[in-house]
Image (cartoon, rainbow, N blue to C red):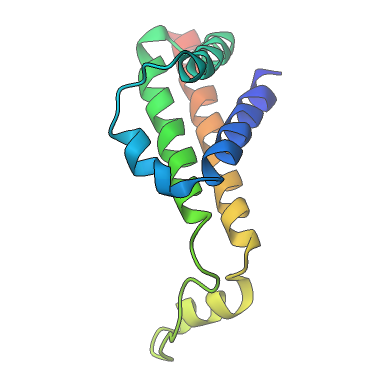
Amino acid sequence: RWEERLALWAQEYRRATAAAPWLVPLMAGQPVEDRLTQELYEVLFQLLRQAGLPEADWTSAATMFDVIVLGSAVDAASPVPLWRSVPPELPLLAGAVARYDTEERKLQGFSMAVRAAVAMVCSCTDSAAAE
């Protein structure tokens, strides 16, 4: 199914970029001119077409996935724990950090974002089909 392939596409893209998070600002500031990267986006556009997303939304969807993947790649280099010295006056943050601010948080957050993005693509295709 296209949903699973789209999630896998995002996971592979993240795996590649998370290996060198310091390159993300350089990548984001350059036009995409190399063939390998263009082929990566060609695969993404094929998946979006299979999903039934209107072509007019493909570049916006690509930007959405870039934000998720590149942001997650930068987060991959963040320290654990991320939140430190949380004062007791912030009990919700302190409690959540004490229990859940682990290395797994990074991949779990990425997975949540990918599921939300795939659901968004699904919702756009449903509304386009209804019109």
